[in-house]
Length: 181
View 1 (cartoon, rainbow, N blue to C red):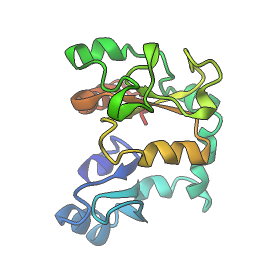
View 2: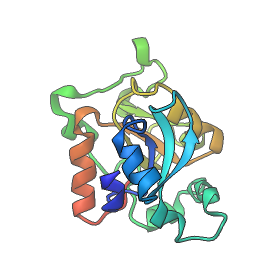
View 3: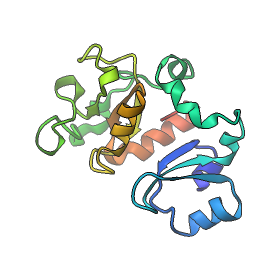
View 4: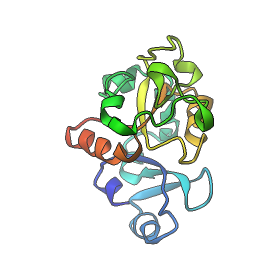
């Protein structure tokens, strides 16, 4: 809604307020946000794209994800790659968000705690530094949806779980003029 209108980000793949007044305001009435359809429970998970962003590219804009199969364009644009941030220092006592054991056995271990690394980024298991860091809240929100999307589309994203720090990290990057996924 308002964050997309303010161009804090261009794509929202999880919008928990989609069924409320924000949907009426930003999608139906002013049409500044396009609803690209549900990817989960209606009103909870979906892919949303700022109307201004959709208008920037050709009619094939929805193929934008192809540019993330090779991370070089995103990295050249200033997106963080795995290893650019010190997730352990950011999380402090909340580290690790997941550790590859118990309910999060698919999550990384060792230096990859609090990360999920898809097959396409595993080239060097201990340091998938050629992949873009995707900032995520936790493994428990829409468990596996976005990880599977990353895997199925062959996207070069390493999911970094920031928990309750996700908002402050995204705002900090925005204020610094750094693109963020």
